[in-house]
Image (cartoon, rainbow, N blue to C red; front, side):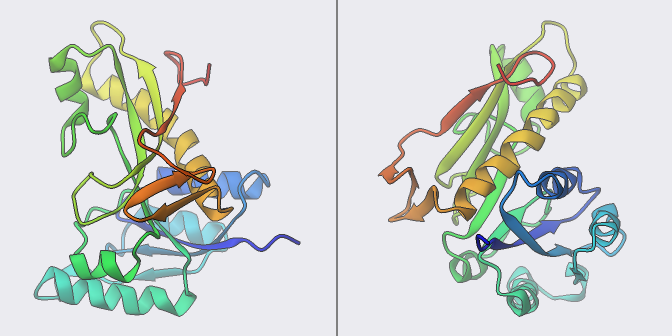
Length: 222
């Protein structure tokens, strides 16, 4: 039996991306071992999803700590109990300290709702509409100390519909996220993608650009 990559998923909210991972693992499409789901909020619904799926959970409230660094040390100490080989940030609403990123160097993935390097930061859906762009989507990338600036792995893009609201666009982009995030994490887990020398290496070569998948208006891969 092929060994599965031990993966920790970090959440703060409802856990829709987490559910996408759970569904793909159940179907046999994703070769990851979901070892633990961690939240900084005890009422995060994603913890219920994890419990229902039989995945161990852990929670540490950030408000109990005086600063980001001490909270991150506690989180790392807790996560290390499961010896994760991959950390997936799935709606984890915390900016990670440099020490935390260094502790798990090259092992942390994030998904950002924009086609990076365009529109890092917040309010990406409204910003892309205001800019009049033709395409929007999400980017899976390795996490570094630079916010939303780590090496890109996979992008899913879809065409913007004239007259749609930021909320409507966000819902369509989320459907793409639920497809590309587990896929990219699976590539890392199986060794097809790795972080090396500050770059994303894909299929044995450094990648200046991410793999791009195009989806239709309904979020179906074309």
